[in-house]
Image (cartoon, rainbow, N blue to C red; front, side, top):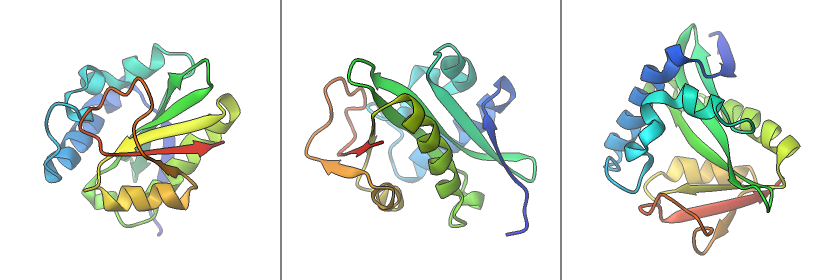
Length: 161
């Protein structure tokens, strides 16, 4: 691939692009309803949401200067040193090119410095995502960890960092 890829922390100028990428992806899979990231209050202002939390981070990926995706790490259970992989989404134009692996590496490299485990939630419809998580060593769980906010999710994973 000869296109220029840049991964950097989210800025306010990226909020609208990431909200659109996330919402379109969820709509495509008929997950645009309560209990998914679609109704998260912070979706329109991801930059200020993540910047207000010292250990939380969100990165966007630019492809030739255009934001095409992102991924976040947020504290899930600070006492148990568990973070959560959050909002890993790519625009359709960026899918199928191995770019999600670059986002995963960025997020997990950061998480491994600050946490002992990484948790995530997804849906069975998102097969490519589940396959990616399993390739990165995430283990399937029978049920969500205590404190889960996305009630519509039906697959849960954890990884020792």
